[in-house]
Image (cartoon, rainbow, N blue to C red; front, side, top):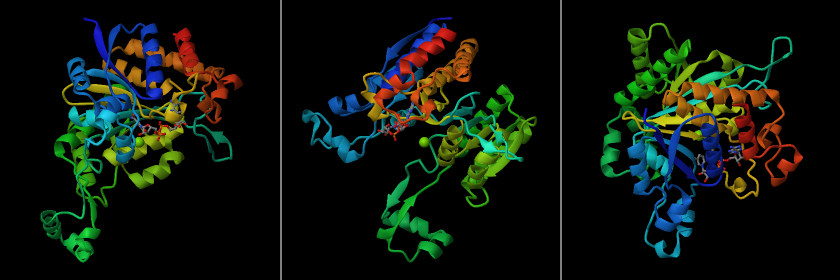
Amino acid sequence: MAKRTIVSLPGDGIGKTVLEEAIRVLTAAGFDADYVEGDIGWEFWKEEGNPLPQRTIDLLAKHKVGLFGAITSKPKDEAAGELSDKLKGKGLIYSSPIVGLRQHFNLDICMRPCKTYKGNPLNFIRRGKNGEVEEPEVDVVIFRQNTEGLYGGVEWSNPSEKVYEALMTHPKFQKNFGKTPVEELSISTRIFTKKATERILRAAFVHARKYGYKSVTVCEKPNVIRETSGMMYKMAQQMQKSDFPEIELWNTNIDAQMMWLTKNPENYGVIVAGNMFGDIISDGFAGLIGGLGFACSAQMSADGIALFEPTHGSAPKYADYPVSIVNPIAMIESACMMLDYLNENDIAVKIRKAVAGIISEGKIRTYDMLKVSGRPEVVENGAVSTKEMADAIISRL
Ligand code: NAI
Ligand code: MG
């Protein structure tokens, strides 16, 4: 097979550090690839007025698979103030390049696995029946619809007359909001399409089948949000019955699911949800398995573009430490998801085994695993640096 080309998108802050380490691990594990670097992030906003240059989009369109670190986003006015002098006052408006990539390539499937590593001091523990300490083993994969729903951006404050008129045709709007002055209205829509709902559901079921999960849980709120959540659940029922009869279909409400998060997280397998509920539930589960240093993700489109990234951001306060202290595991795990996607399973297994070994041995810990606050001195006080963690993983491969 021809050598693969991976687009590396370091972005800003710690995104650069963790991506560099992940690529070192990939190479040491025997993944044979060329990496081409794509320009993305704050530097390009300041110098070019565009944090996502067209050449970067072209690069990803060409090579299809990207490893992404993290970017820095700032509010509009602050962003405009940081433009280079030649670009100031030209009316340029900042928008997040990762959201830009998601929209441009229609990366509608977001997958976020949350799996407990034995021996991770950050694992969630709870009290058992007789007061004993229990450490539930979580192995959940969240499929989040990534482009629609409440984050779809169809919103108004003080809506136009046409919009207002249309809303007034709904009896509930008329009754509950019809007397509110229009300039006092803010409206965010929650739009689901059958096509995107079908895709996220099918991705969830296919994953459950491929990796042997016994259940798929639709985590929405169909009893209240009848149209969108209702459609998703109904479609899931049909799909399960016709195409995935061996997999159980469960239905939970997002609010109750958050409560059950700590009660019985080990009971769930694949979870599927719309954009916002998927965001919430995946952060919730990530908290049980170690938080941002461990939370990895993939975003995929229907036409074969895929982007793998840790869910954390650029952590600017740690970006300029003389020795980087952040945990590279979330990025390395994201790289393993890329390997799964590329059917390089043997290499992924090898890396995950090495990570698991380091964690269960308990000698090598980044600052977050030691539960101390992140300061430059942590490396003198027993925490390993980002690079040392990667070195340790490499030495175990
Ligand atoms: P963040 O994820 O960058 O950091 C929050 C805190 O989590 C950090 O201060 C640190 O204590 C901890 N943390 C993050 N990654 C870690 C790691 N690998 N190891 C150990 N500890 C880690 O989120 P924050 O501070 O809200 O945002 C910082 C910048 O990142 C903002 O400009 C934000 O817009 C951007 N951001 C970008 C994302 C992306 O690129 N996908 C996602 C989230 C935020
Ligand atoms: Mg989030």
